[in-house]
Length: 180
Image 1 (spheres, rainbow, N blue to C red):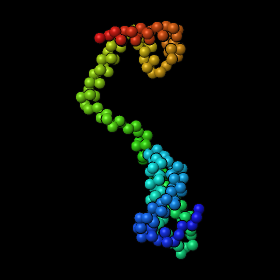
Image 2: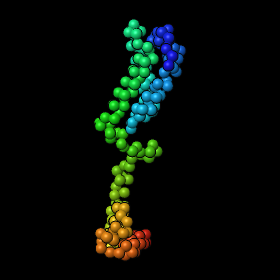
Image 3: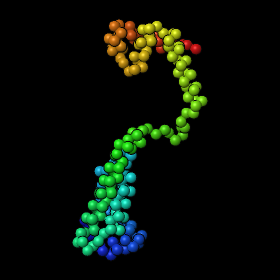
Image 4: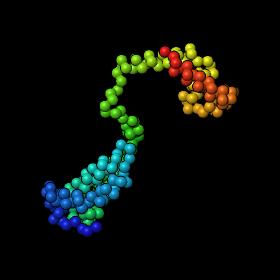
């Protein structure tokens, strides 16, 4: 990487927008490389790029040419530190509920009390139909199927043949479809 001119650094520190833009363009490959390495749930690529830019601005403000360190190396270190700190902050356990949750679609609002009551009544109705219409074998086969068990596994648990379980499941579906 070519050395950055002291004039450019001085102008950028004095808030010259053209100098800042030139410096950002010059350091963007370093920022992007660090951003790829510091992605995490809740801290995506764009967030890491922003943190790298913040690190670059901090480097511009705090750079001292009297120390004999080249600006490019100093800025790369500041960028990496800012991105690493942001990565650590994003992966803290206290943010796990936010990082692991699934957002609701924007156009779908959370159900209100009325909708929850209606859904609860519908669920209770389905449970009543299952209890009244189905035999114990049909009920057990249906519940096992809803839990993701195969017919062979259900047959082993119930002490029946897989064909008997499949037939019971078919009867249960037919009864529940035809129920009012």
